[in-house]
Structures are given as C-alpha cells and as structure tokens.
Length: 169
Image (cartoon, rainbow, N blue to C red; front, side):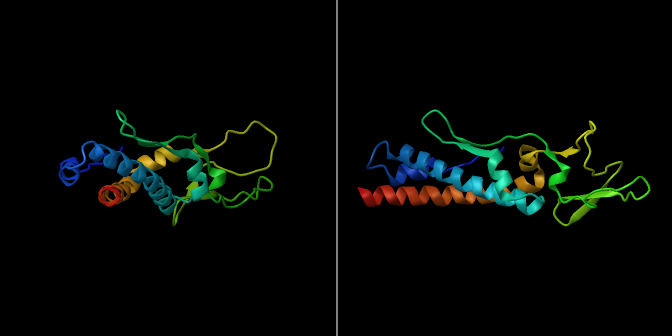
C-alpha cells in the first residue's frame, strides 16, 4: 500500500486568506494523483511483467477522495493463465515429441515449467496460472519504483491546485 503524504500546513499557509480552500486543494490534488497513479501503476507492472497495459487496466480502478475518505487505487483480479505469457512450444504433438514448456512472466526472463505442456484437448486438464495483477502490483520491484513517482506527483499536483485556486480568487 502506498501512502501519499502532502504538506497540509503549507497549503493552509498559502491559502490562509480563503478558509476551507486548503482542504479542497488537497482533495483535488489527491484525486489527480490517483488518476495519474493508476497510469503509473499500469506502466510499472507492464514494464516488469510480460503483460499488456490493457490487461492491467481491466484489473485496476480508483476510488476518489472525498471528505472522510482518502481515496485509493484498487487492484483486483484472478490469477492469470500461463498461456498469456508467450508459451513455447505452442503445442505438443505426440508423446515422443515433447519439448519442455517455457513462459516469460518477468520481462527478459524465460523459465521452464516443470511438467507443463500446451495442447488442444477436451480432457479436464488443470490450468497453470501465475499471480494476478493485484499480486503483481504488490511486488517490491513494482512498489519500489511506483511509490517515489506517486509521492512526487502528489506534491506537484498540490502546488498546481493551490496555484489554480489562487488564480481564480
């Protein structure tokens, strides 16, 4: 979980002539940060994992901030089948022609799936999966990249919202 820290004292100091606007500026800055944070999360996940941003976008949503609620980025979804990570070979033909199945879950790192195979069959075959988008987002490699970017964007958005409110008054 990423916690956004904003300097509310600075916002109140700059907007002291207009009571109540500091909270409005903070709320607007958080909402803008959530929107851009969702994009940053999609990009960070698809940069590290071999998954398209559109697939990630289906699993990530935002909940806007309002008085009494800080807002959040929510990642949901089931585990993703290995068939979505470029399996090689595409299909095994015959028992004697089997080659080991390999997939590329993490970009640039192809791994062999022990006992795995791909085939077009009607039998009840157990589907092999890996972690879903929520698990991918929680990985330390994605979070370590994402947290400083979102924090910097939040401060930039707060300054932008304060300037916008001051220009309008």
